[in-house]
Image 1: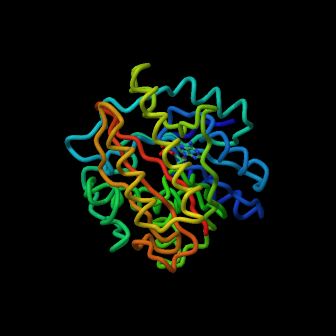
Image 2 (image 1 turned 135 degrees about the vertical axis):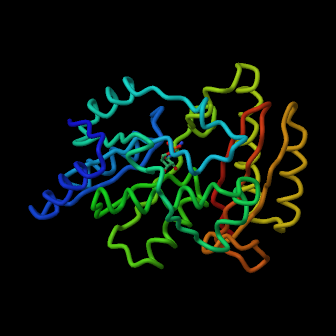
Image 3 (image 1 turned 180 degrees about the vertical axis):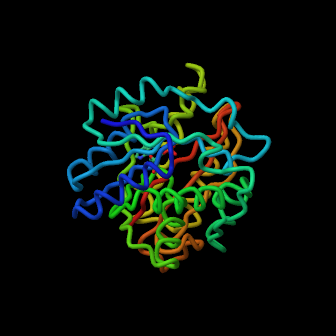
Length: 279
Ligand code: AMP
């Protein structure tokens, strides 16, 4: 396994593999790796000749009042996890190497970037789309792996890839959860023991809602779930919406495939989770 810090060097290596006919898989991450990330890595190892994991806490997707500085960074452990999982390259550029002082170009995926998480984190998806586009160009990826845990992010990357004619194929990967149901997230490390217990309610409520969606009306299911979420002590809802899988528009009675997506604060930690719902 090689750790590469320089964008040009990474791109040169990727071009060489492309020329040699290797299929390249990219797993973009912000590090503090857990089994959710590992599930993406395992898929790439299985599908692709070469697996590149990027570890980059991307400053341009954090608002000024957000947790960029305190975001967990465990590079040594991350490298061990990558090595153990047979990753070929870890791409871990510095901020200056990715975004020089003179940097001026940004990607916006209209409409999708403004709803749900985007309504609460205005610069978030512009930052995500921009860095992912750069990572696609640097890695020459044939396939890129994204978790359904960040469902809106996945839809935005799919849309950007289609709109901008990227050759990279997006591979969606299922949410990995703890036995308790809690979706794995690097930010779970912010939670105290007590907050962690409270946060288990989120996946439980989503699971119940998905069951009810089969035979109850959408409004009833959504309202009931929101009421339950509101009752979690020390919590605050950013949003809890049942939307169409296709384009994240609000689901209606004709929607057959929906996603119930939520962002809920437990204390000072913002957690997102979602579940697919089918009639
Ligand atoms: P992050 O490091 O949080 O930016 O996540 C990097 C990638 O891992 C994204 O595509 C996430 O959707 C994915 N990911 C994070 N948590 C999970 C999880 N619990 N299950 C599956 N994928 C995940």
